[in-house]
Image (cartoon, rainbow over all chains, first blue to last red):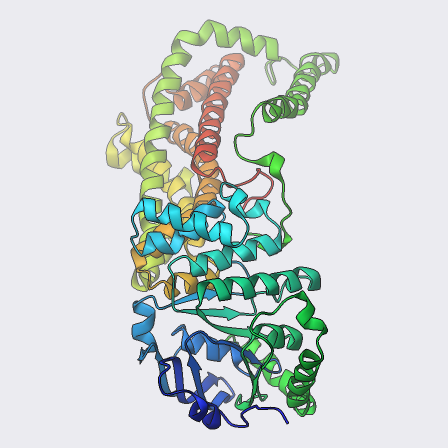
Amino acid sequence: MIPDSATPAAAAAATPAAATPVVEIRGVDKTFATASGGVVALQGIDLTIRAGEFVSLIGPSGCGKSTLLRIIGDLTGPSAGDVLVNGKPSHRARLDRDYGMVFQAPVLMDWRTVARNVELPLEVMRYPKADRQARSKRLLDLVELGEFGNRYPWQLSGGMQQRVAIARAFAFDPALILMDEPFGALDEMTRERMNLELMRIWRETETTIVFVTHSIPEAVFLSTRVVVMSPRPGRVNRVVEVDLPPLRTFETREERRYFELVTEVREALRGFEEAAAVDEVVDARIRVEGIG
Amino acid sequence: MTAAAARVPQPGRRPGAGHAVASERLRALVPPVGAAIVVLLLWEFLLQALGFAEFLLPRPTTIVTAFLQQWPVLQKGIVYTGGEALAGFLVGVSLGVIAAFATARWATAREALMPVAIAASSIPIIAMAPISSAWFGVESPLARIFIVTLMVFFPVMVNTVRGLTSVEASALELMRSYAAGDVDTFRHVRIPNALPFLFTALRIAATLSVIGAVIGEYFGGPRYSLGIYISSEAYLFRYPNAWAGIVCACLIGTVFFAAVLVLERIAIPWHRGDGRDA
């Protein structure tokens, strides 16, 4: 009934040949070494993300979705398999500054004003000063913080700080944005407003976004595709194509099709509940041994 | 650093927010000044009423009189001892900061320097002072500068290392995602993060440096240097003069401390308040 792809292979096959994949993940495994042996975090991940897509990774905690995001960004390496970003090995792509990163915490520098926080990547990348200022102004306007450029991060609320982090990620026009539960620490109302804003920014900038989240409604609302992962060892269990109209608004959350998709993702996740209980134990062990 | 999410907007506390802050600062001066006046008054009248011998603890007015009488000598002592303390402070801070950078950057340096720093900090200064006098000569200020350097080095190094290394992992990952090199990571993340730690150490070092210089002078130095002056006046039972010398040492320490506070305000305007040290 729903035009989703049951396997990632099918999803890849459905990709029009013309579109260049921004991210290509082939046979990626990730094993963490712990004192009590290896813990397999990811197994046999295949995933292709096309330009302009908004792909959410969702799964029970400990399924390795953040690890997968970090592998795409070359913040950690895979134990096996290949990751290509813009057709290059992920390491090369990182050195070429092909992606922007947003973490769960805003990670703003206390000693820099809001505007200069947005300029940080531009300074590292040696953009000329006038260009830096023009870009930070444009991006702060984009996240509707134009008035706050001269404030310090601690003078802003949590939601505003996260918007600064988003502006910073977009500052150097990367083709790919990686977001690791960026709204996880925000209250539900702020989160819904941030979802709308991110939607707008994504459409205006025409970037590709990979988005890790715990929230099913958030994943469905934002994404063009939702990748549902299984508990450890993390695998791509199912890929749900979100066939909602491209322009999502506040009303989208009240549409019938939206609820159907939320249910579909929830059911894809459901089988894992018992397994998740066992998983908590492994999670705790990984945390204790400091590799989570 | 506190969790960013826990912070609430406080527009009134922006650095350099004008007159309101100035009068707030004046008001903040009232309790310490008041306390000092009360202590001095009690000291002046209570000790006398309780029948304390004046030579054991002279009254503040006696000390002030001695201070004014002895000013020509004390003045030279302040300049000399203060100079030694300042020189030792600057050398010790520089070496401490350099050692901290090496330690934070290279694991080999960490393994090599940390034990040396810890050993240096455990040397009893009172034992080291006569040895230092023997090395550099009783008359040479280098003997005291060496002692002060030794005392200042450790707190500066340890605090700076902590500031350079206790950086949020995600801040380092952010820099990594920009393909930033070591120099950029130090410049944009580690050094600004270390500044509040460094200034905490500088406050400690400011007072330690005066103590180190005075202790050092007990084992040598010109007649007018504060350490020699205090010990010889006490030896001759001229306690008000000895106390006047102690007051001078306190003055130097206070001036150093205040200078560090002023520098701190200039260097790290984003760092809020004294009660929320890193």
